[in-house]
Length: 371
Image 1 (cartoon, one colour):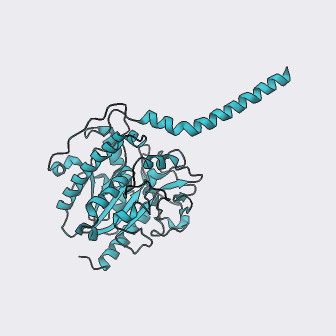
Image 2 (cartoon, one colour):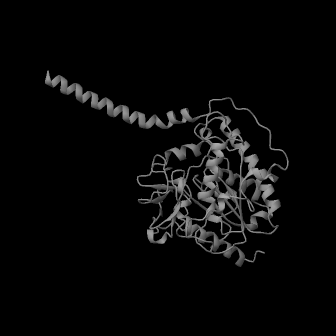
Image 3 (tube, helix red, strand yellow):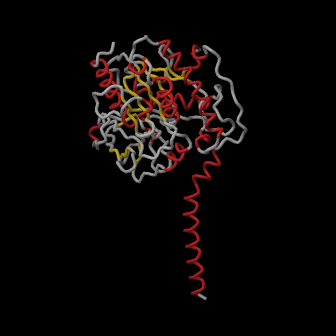
């Protein structure tokens, strides 16, 4: 009888292990199904001409009262006032399944977008001005499923961004340098903007640098279509900085699966490792120790007193995965995703270094003889 019970117990353990493995393999699909919008896609008209002339259509712009992009942690002031104007595209903050695109009057997603601008775009507030449009972003669930509606939702978000970019160009000085930055969905839209609205135009000569984070950028299928090389040193202008931050053991399957639902800029499926430019080395894919990090920004819903965190972390570009790997990162907030995914802190982890990075690239742009 004891042998029968022992055998039955072993069978239960084996079945439990098999079930756990199966659940681990199928969980991404189950999660995707649970997050996908549960309503029919309804086409929406383009925004009316002049929509981005309205102040409420911007999360940040020069002259705005209580501009989240102008945040500075206690004890940190402006070291310079650059001449570049920054166009920043916030990440996905609309989590509902009730729409394929965020309604412009959805308060919760706007609040989260403002927080993202505060923690990410504030990197650039030593420059002349930061413009961050409020746009009808595609819902989080649209990136979890490979359906035609997902691409239509992204196209609507892109149409808003193109209108906002046109207004941005009209409002800033005609020859002023430009920094383009985006995170997650914002990075994907920025890639399309580079291909369709910047490359081959006079605007391209005005680009100081492009910062694309939280989304895989293909060196083979995306980068050539932008017309810009990857950054490899700090004194380089007109180049692309791109990275996705993970801690070991890193599991990027979820973010790579989301990206696989969209073709690369050349229309193909990206089959190479993502571009990794190390923000602590000026872009070179080298390892940098924690001592090279001059401070991370801790900010989030749950933090009463945002602050600059030291000591922080070093970082290395992993040649096998194309990920930026950090070891034992500090607590900056509660937005670490499964798989040791720290991409929500792609900019915050390197906040102070990136302020110097954009300054060095603007100086290089000016030395190149641009007006």
